[in-house]
Length: 215
Ligand SMILES: C[S@@+](CC[C@H](N)C(=O)[O-])C[C@H]1O[C@@H](n2cnc3c(N)ncnc32)[C@H](O)[C@@H]1O
Image: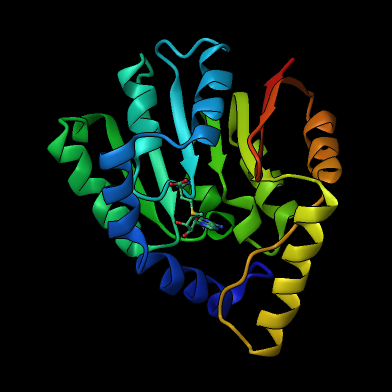
């Protein structure tokens, strides 16, 4: 079992399942957030035509639906939250992409061996929800043939230390879910030792987006 464990995974499921309907409603009303437009741009410039997508922590699936509409071949979405995946499946039917998408409910770190490789792997605001960034990143890199794209809270003191404070307070109250701040440099080192090189970096106020390409 990963260091997340059943309690941590069910905490993430409980927290995000309550948010699933709101995520989809917000997207239908407003489209991609600014940070997601950056992520999309960074991925698009690597060339997405006919590429396969693996989106870990895919939520209700709208991000990979946009990649498919822009030319990607198909997408696999994985999320710990059953409600997120339920909404993703319904939404893909609604927009006619159900034949080009498939989904798994579960902690990617636990189920990665059952998941095939993809050309492009996406983790949009996911690494910061998970305690063991090393394991999540390592296992997701191993499923990536070409492009690894992700968004994290920015590495600025006025973001990092308030997150650490929130974590400490939520731990005192034994909250079943809390965010994490993971050092960007250690994620970059893992990617670099897997032969990936940074191709794109951009930020909005809170979020930093990176796209790495395998040499
Ligand atoms: C902040 S939400 C972002 C959802 C989506 N990427 C978006 O931006 O709309 C983080 C999502 O990651 C999922 N998640 C976190 N850790 C995960 C893991 N180890 N495996 C699969 N899903 C995970 C959560 O359940 C949640 O739906």
